[in-house]
Image 1 (cartoon, rainbow, N blue to C red):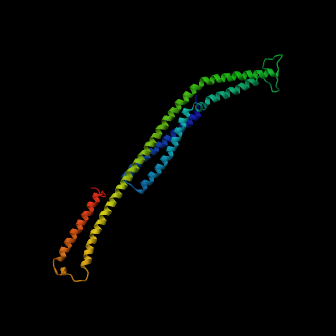
Image 2 (tube, rainbow, N blue to C red):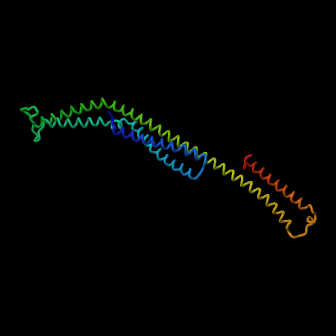
Image 3 (cartoon, helix red, strand yellow):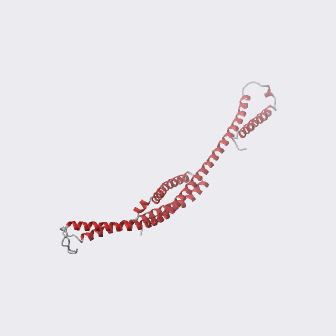
Length: 267
């Protein structure tokens, strides 16, 4: 029989932590899959709360694991956890005191239950008490030394079983944290891709705006009120439009080639 109160408490703690980890794992994976398919503020907030719970639970599991590992490394602490040995010592001490008191009366004289000696004295009773105490301590030390190794081995087996369970729980939480980190990296990659697409669209839009501004410059020049011989030609307007359009298109293509050459846009 080992320290059942201590081991029962450890069993309850480890079981509760394992259940919390299992519940968190069941809740996490569908939420992360939903987040990868649909990035929204609500899903991001749910993942943030989930990650906070995961970090807090991981700290608790890590602390319990470290405590069990420390107990397994210290034989003295495991011996202190053997409550049955302490109970035996208390009972032996109690019954030993009762046996000594049986030889002594309340007024310091030997009782009738003890063998009466004609030369009995208080010093005899003290010697008897001392010899009884020495015998009891020898008996207790012998029994303690015999059962110490066995009790430590039993506790070590229990602690190893608990250590395996709590280490498995910690590995599950670590894997879940890594999955969350991978999901966050994937989301960041997606957001970076969208941001790059927006920048590319902005570059094309700015280039097109510049080309259109060229038409505005030409229209502003020809809209001025001063005589030009070109106005007298009936086909001049068409040629101005053609030349301006070709020039604008050439400028636009030059900008696009420059963006691709500088790897500002995908090839």
